[in-house]
Length: 409
Image: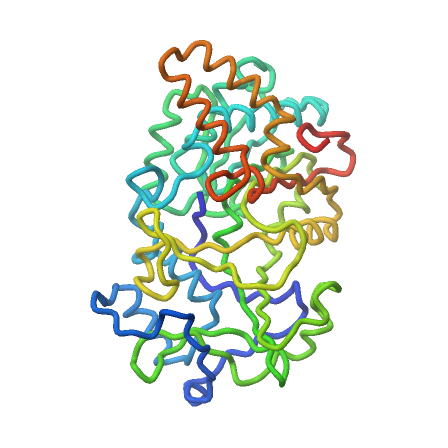
């Protein structure tokens, strides 16, 4: 699940610069990005969404807004945002996540959490926190799997960080008879801090707002969303370069060519998670699609009804996400004092946790449905455009005092 909080993310702590927001007077100074091939024609099916009307009002008052603010509004606006009033998961939604593909995924995550708890010394109280729990499928499967570890279940208090009212209802239904106490929170900051914790974030970070900057002759300029001469939303560049940005880029990206695009997110959340692990003990597991090392390139995409869409069209009605920079997450966590394991591919992680053995057990009991289990195993572990095994990565953060955690070699 990729539910996020409402509000723009303009934090620039990762690159150490101040982001400059243009005034209305600067609107006409923006240089529009050239449209990709095949774009630029009239949209015969154009329909302004309620959120687009709101975004246009913001631009009219404040001038063009950063891509990150546009993304935050598109996903998290409390009334018109993508997650405000819909369940986007499954065949009838816009996308399918790993827990919806097979129970094996959530079961193995649950057993991983139990192993982490054992490594923590088996504390009598531990908070199992999931960020963006979707329909509650992953946590329900995890809790069922850890019935084999009754001491761990007895120690558990489950905390779900969810902003969508629709999905909260789904989660409440899924966990109505789970047998452990469950609480809901709007943000990680609302989760009590006194206990050790195990954090699960599956396909969560990819939906946190992403900033984009483009290298021009004059320096690195933030990419903005404004209104073009044809009165449609358009991507454009802030007229002023970001001061000292080249010095803050990852070392391997220092010779970026003109026209290169770099994306980054605020590191506030991962820093908060790492800080809690160091202070109170525990571990976190982050599973998402993205790249192991920081890289140039544009990855922001829109998806609706299982098909790709234009990022600027129908804001609030299509899902937006961008690749996760696992190197950036790991570096931020290490700066906060946490131990970092990985990233490894989802294929390696699930195989080391025994997904093939679990699939064989399920197939034996499934009879005529054995082929479905085999197909789910392939979807979760294989490479290629239809598989999640290589594109998806897994990163663990931990209290430095913890030893080895399963799944990371």
